[in-house]
Length: 286
Image (cartoon, rainbow, N blue to C red; front, side):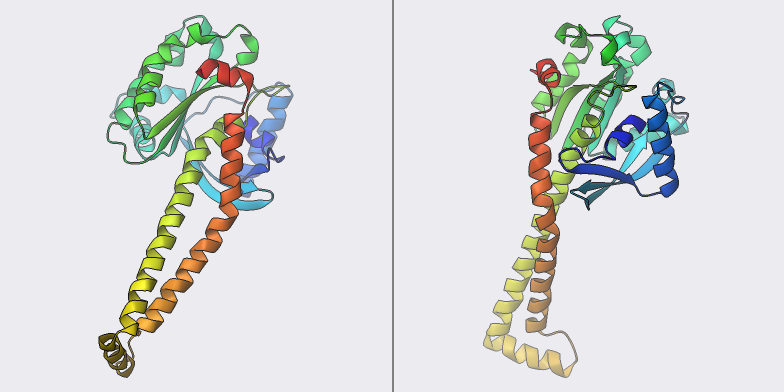
């Protein structure tokens, strides 16, 4: 995550990232710089939560929360606090990133990666899925396994097939590497955010439509004879009139439209960027 954060301090296709907490911003930058020198941080000790803002061409367009879980949570019983937090996060997430060691994968050391446990947790968490979800299977240390191919991905086939059959889910294998030279480190978070931002935009369109419908309803009532008499009564009782309610709804519709405009281009740009990500990414997923 630190390498990703460092990479997105410079705009990539117009996108950049900023932690909302200045202390976390400085810490993540410091860790990113250490990784670039080949000095790696200790593994995550417990669940950490980060609040980020995604920017496009210097303007913030989307706030999101990143919950970072340690691998040991996979081995704990369902009664443990860390395991409970992990399962709850999986159920409500718009995007899930599963990190797997590519070296261990090629050596068929599935126990090291806890692949079976990860797949089981994801499958259980999406059984009653009521929103769109993006799942990224992130293969780390891919610079150390140049011959990585589809045969090494067999442990994920059942999960990928399940995703293909679920209209609410999308999934991709994302190879990355971080160190002196970074490879694709920005892709996982941008891929995971794609659905979240699209859902946010869809929600705004729905909100605008609802305001417009209310405005039209109040406008029609104000123009009827019965509505005219009602407005006199409302005025005498110092209540909002149909005309005022219609104006208020039209105003809210315009305000929502103003929120929509800055997001349209980033959503299209992000979709294009992810679809054209890299030759290796496409070769592993096709």
